[in-house]
Image 1 (cartoon, one colour):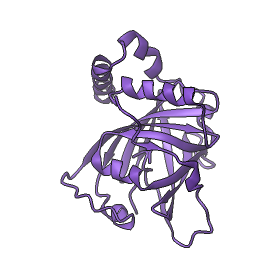
Image 2 (spheres, helix red, strand yellow):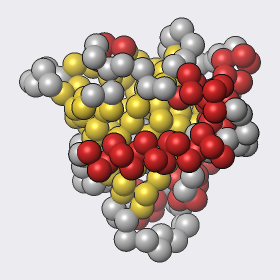
Image 3 (cartoon, helix red, strand yellow):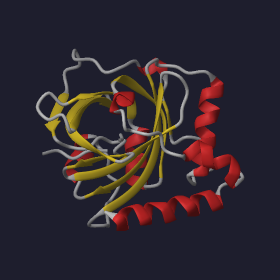
Length: 229
């Protein structure tokens, strides 16, 4: 575990050094929020914008119409939380439910995809997640989404950061704040995904719906990336 945190520290430090923003300006933007009280994660939130550093996950973002998730306390294990996520991708609805644990200020999910994510400072009613993902074979999921991007690695390693909010829209200033955070993490460009309210939300009335249990989401991509069981 110490190896993981040492590695994460070194990676974060390298992003701060390469960011277009000064280190002293980045530090408060990317210092994780304490998860001593996990209720800061509770509730239903919409995915507003996101970045990823992997081509395959970027292809998933391109076909994402809308996405939301709900985090709550596990009814069977007080040491775990439950994240339910609904995604509308290429007109199809995908749902997932995954358990995760809090380790210090890091939330960890483990299934076919292992995701480690930290909560970063954000606006009122918002949630910013910085995510590191290790994924195995996701070819089955990609096939359902009609994504043909070839996967050449046996194991994928991905970094992503997502902005989420209780409302479906945010002020421009909130989005700009998120872009600064992303820049501090090495994403010095416009977001790879920005929710278009014209696409609407997830609907149980749509005829094509796929459900899978204990898989990490495509943000976990969070984020937004998953594996069928």
